[in-house]
Length: 336
Ligand code: FAQ
Image (tube, rainbow, N blue to C red; front, side, top):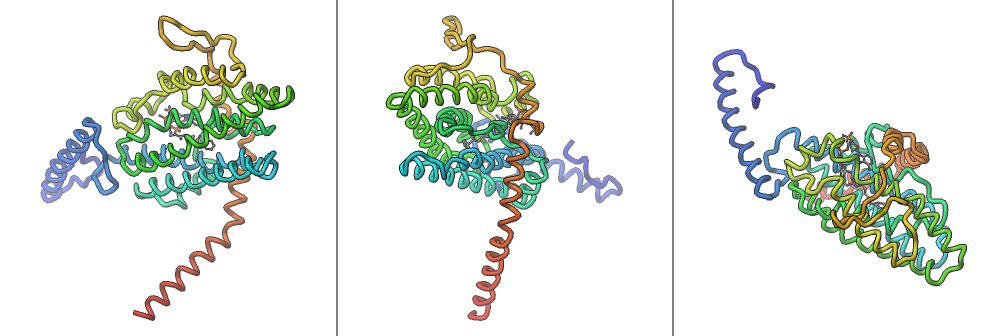
């Protein structure tokens, strides 16, 4: 199985094949042992081609999610109700751009270029999180994104800090710290609206929670028994906790936060199950999830068009940066 792509003609080749097979077998065993012990794989270490491919898929989808995720909230920077909220939102959206950059850099350590990854996004081939294809209709949506979307993101991302691929795990440590601030600022902004706001403002918060709740539960991905990437992802330590388990943890944590906030979660089936010691919740509309993932959500086209426009209009900046770097290299060469 380790020599499928090799030339099998001639004695030399056969000997070479045996040698390489033994060497690769040894490398594979070392890789498996490291992963089984909960250890880390660095960029320079040997890894199976499929492990590399799976990581590029997940890390790049994650990076795309961060930069597409700047758009729904970015839409409200110029309309934030106070200077304080505007400064907080600006910092948050900038953080998301930074997360995208750490993640693209982590993906690049696996031998893909940023241009290839961005081409895949711009051509519509690459996935990004379904959640960013929903509109932000009122200021309350910004608070709810912080509370629920960042809350769900943290729940999913904390276990990735222990992902077997070290550059991804390291990036996640910093990202999770920043996401925690994002979640708190969202909750704080909603708390102010609920405790000090008018009835109309409280109604905006409830309406935003009603619209975002179900899409947030979908963020964790399809149910475990319909998740084609889970088994291998868990085996390789890329994924540490399953989609359904994380979704349940999120529901359990959020019910208590909703009570404190004074909002209702829009699910009549939400009920404490004393046997399971978890909150039961109603069935998720997976048809809606796949519709959105496959490009037919409320804002898919708008989001992609905005990214492509930003890329095209930023061409002169990339050209100027490259020209500056070339000039600097030339000057250094002349001085040497
Ligand atoms: N949206 O077999 P599985 C954030 C796809 S960052 C779209 O279960 P896997 C920060 C999946 O890719 C949010 N597609 O897949 C922020 C696969 O398709 P493929 C992003 C989805 O990888 C906050 C297929 O369905 N976070 O929010 C989704 O084992 C606020 C089958 O699924 C990450 O990316 C979805 N929700 O598990 C920014 C975390 N779910 O590739 C701004 C890292 C699944 O085979 C504002 N990623 N699919 O064609 C992960 O943990 C995993 O990739 C999962 C999916 C859990 C997302």
